[in-house]
Image 1 (cartoon, rainbow, N blue to C red):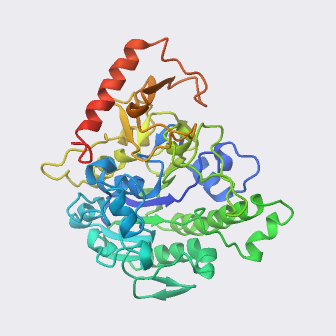
Image 2 (tube, rainbow, N blue to C red):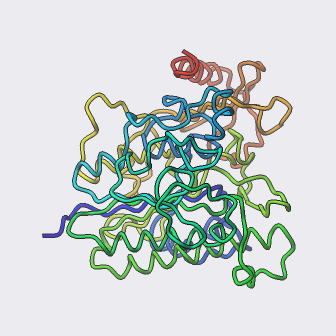
Length: 432
């Protein structure tokens, strides 16, 4: 008898900005398949990741913890750079792992696409890092991780540094979707959990002439960037269509989101990401760096065509997905997130406790990258840097672009949020 627990697909894009989708207000970018996903499911306007860069954000999707708990507060890079920044070379394999728990509770689990939590070949991934499969997956094929990958468009059984491979870069989303479809079709009665973590639109960007064709009249970097986004949307559309044709489609959850805000606009890189009017970008604790698209389609449970403005975080997925899968939170595990299953089913709820950010690599000379700590509750967002003795306060509602700094109007709120943020920071392994 078919297991009635839901199938789960988590699509994590790479540097896909809040304003990089038609359904989030972009009038130029062509993303019809993801826009359709939003119209057939629910779109969330206040979803945040835990870091403005890749590796720490991804750490939270796996562990349900803020990345500071595991020391991964910046992107994993060369060994010497990691050591200099006091960052480990890989995620501790003893860390809680959502795929591992689901696997132990009867789910078929797979990871296709980017990893970036250790390994990956060349100077940028430690050869001794655990394989991606060891974190609880039945099957993997990845880049920026140790284990099977691709060379060009061909499957490759060993770890490989991919970023220099232009053929792979142009086809990475297609390859990851192909692997996902193969895993789904090979299944039996067990439900499946798949992390589909695509590269696009992270650099390097090398769209083919065919992918560029719809945008050939645009200048750079728009031509390159829109070509990559449109192709990724096309490939994901293949997945959405295939899932929709299955008998268990009504009981399959598809989540689309991003790991952080968009890269800076650079013609030489082909990057032209949009924050949709949010302040800041990648590497910034302003909303443009941490507020990302979040779309959920779950036909049996998620309202169709609804926009939900509940305040939610990527650390919420761990307890939420365990709850709906019937798996128990491990003994002794203290989640940093909350169960948002009711929000996935359409309720708009007040968040019960604040969200936190720590960014230990601020640039005091950068107007958008000076903050090192941030905290947000239902009413306010406090952004600060204790070393600079600088604090800014913004209302959570009614100030989408964080333009109206209001710390002088709410001194009590400033002191309370500042105390919470500093106390939280003081117990992080890096600072304790």
